Image (cartoon, rainbow, N blue to C red; front, top):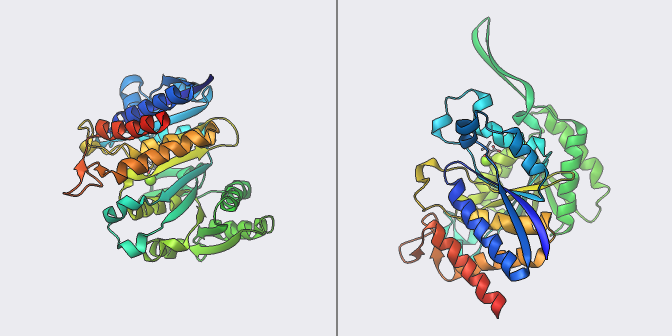
Length: 363
Ligand code: IPM
Ligand code: MG
């Protein structure tokens, strides 16, 4: 029996509800494949602010560092809107990404064929969408200093800083090339090189290291155009590599190709150490505690966890298949459902996925 230590950080809003389903699913996988998952729970985000006064307690960082992988729900909510930056839930999330040096954020945008009608876009546009967004996660305007509000000669002024080193660019762009090698070998590097100095360097770096990956076709796209092309013709993309904030924005946009933000998982990987797995959606405070959230993004994040942190490819594939099957059978949560489909609550959707899993393995 193999044993794995999984740090679980449910966080705020719908985080705990969707994480519960992901944990139950991993337990089922463990039972069927004879793996033992040791789940240890930690606090992050608003709940941590409320209980211990900081969104990222040192204990949580230690817990994550001593685990094989981290499963996270979501952070944030209106309750903490007026807190100073050090007590904001989001600061906890950014902090754990930084503490674990999770520079590579993989956001696969895959359309499950049975959800084609849930996308607000036309069927012929979204058909066969299969994109991997590779977002830089520990640099750029999210982390640069100075960042402040101050009073100048003309009143209040604010400053945010977009800072990158060439090395930070190189490692994420290399990751993009490597991932493209395992797919359709097309890499689109997204920047704003017509305006930003950082983007000009980004483009230079991409061109320079392209020489090491002659089998991958590299192209450059300005971020505004990329936002438009994602909606116009998503099929043109294979792997997209981009800096932190562009990746944040484009991945929310791209989620609509799949029908719902509630469907998109993510993996955040570092140089070494544990990876962190979380849905790309937020804490959705408006529906928290109501058992209506879609757990599939978090369940699909466990597939990424099994694959990227534990090397359990077969188990990962099975989780993805199980989600596919549950959708094929017409099971939906409210975000992806329409009147003629069976709309389930959060725990029922989790159960639907698990029951497929049980049935398949027994056969
Ligand atoms: C995401 C989220 C976070 C981000 C927020 C909650 C800080 O939007 O993971 O995409 O901007 O990175
Ligand atoms: Mg985001």
